[in-house]
Image 1 (cartoon, rainbow, N blue to C red):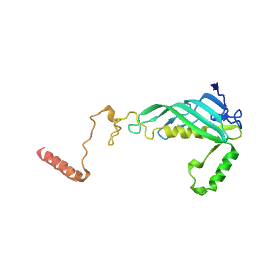
Image 2 (spheres, rainbow, N blue to C red):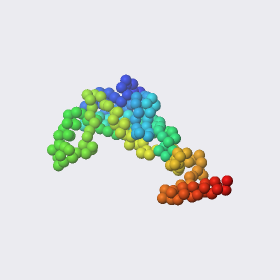
Image 3 (cartoon, rainbow, N blue to C red):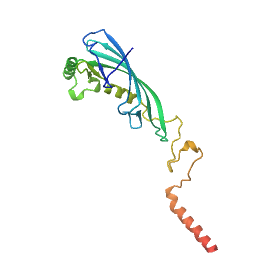
Length: 202
């Protein structure tokens, strides 16, 4: 595979493929993530090394992009809040349509059985900007979809104590004697009674 050198991280030049159905080109390159890619709890952090593999195929509608993005994702365990890391390798495939083909598709879809407001995301298409293909949104969507919704440091992580916040994995016997609030008034009366008895004896 040829090395890809591009000042703009996500943008690929497709001029060798445009309007030439049947031709193909493969690229590989690496870069540092310019900003965070992921969810609130886990993602590829800014500056993290990202590896890209891409195959571009020219078709009648545009250029079909098939690729893989690999990186180390990091975040926090949703149970114990410890930091965690996960090797991420995500595949994607999207058609980048020629602008006139995308416009035609939208026009046909708009005159179909569904109204414009009823169209789903499946009707949306990525488009080539001249000879350029911008992969940023495609990669972001693929990464976010692949990341765990609630990442944990280990499947059986017990989390934190809901009363004091102690890390339960460090003390499996950790517990609190919790009194039902409906009995708290009686507990206070009993304590007052004991203190009164002690004062009398003293």
